[in-house]
Image (cartoon, rainbow, N blue to C red):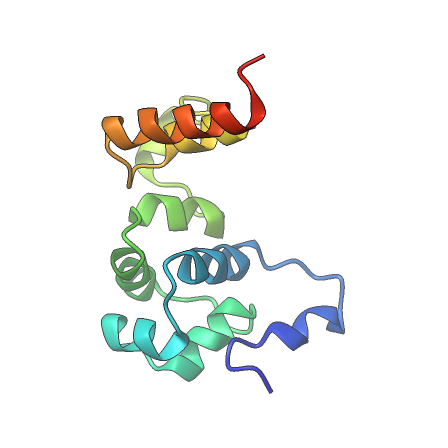
Length: 129
């Protein structure tokens, strides 16, 4: 059995966008469940269950996960379907990224210089047509 619970996906058509987002971000950060558990003070078994959609984490756990993944809590709350006060006031203020360049521009972990460099590299591969 995989420690990430990847084999459990085919049990139903039920979607788990929060857990899938957390798993994807953890994998992008090249963190194992055990490493993330150590960073969040949450057990790796519980984190695995969150990723598989078996538990809905508390706000405190989401904050710990966001910090470990170097994301904002608002990004995780948005994935969980929980709107913050700012999102309720201006739901269309920041549309979801629709392309690679938009995703690069929207990533809060990147500095402006990093965004420019990544977009430049991306365009060199695909052309800027």
